[in-house]
Length: 256
Picture (cartoon, helix red, strand yellow):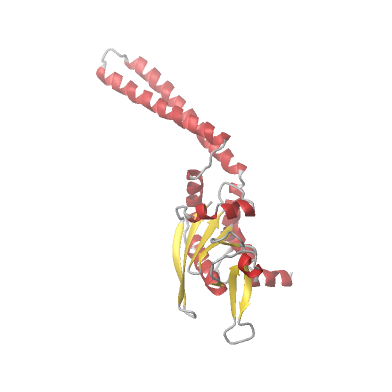
């Protein structure tokens, strides 16, 4: 168990960071090993293995660690409404499926019912011959239809999110947050993976933290979609400054 704990702290980013340039996984390596200038770097695995002509530059692991700690503390620990915000964004990024098609049809039906209610009110105002009894009967019938329509939409949305393990992911984040009594000081693999699905290294000064949303991606699918993920509207953005190297790391958090 001690060895596992040590591994989780020493290698928290193992097989976790994807190169934006070529889509391969970054690997941990030493620069200037055994000298005062020794550094731990994260570099594209394709470049290291000589399997790809990747132009991406290596990134200081300390920069990624510092940005990750700052992001986790500021985005997740300090933001009390983070879970509802994530839920809201996930619902707004639902992808096409049979369930979504049903939801879209119900939403169209709801719009039509609301139009009929509006027309009914206009008729009552313009036509004094419409009895109050007839108006009340039709109005109650339409409002009941609208209520049932919205209830069914909420039900389908809940089932849809559940189909992609979203609830369990959010529950894991919430449980981790509840167990963290103090700000995070260092990154370990278990904590990192409770919050983040993958990291994309765009440049040595820019990274994207990807929070799992409504779909499970294979490594290949994630790699193929990396640029689309980079372009998503961020849940949060920030900048980390490392005094040791006098360098900055910009980050953003997206839900995929």
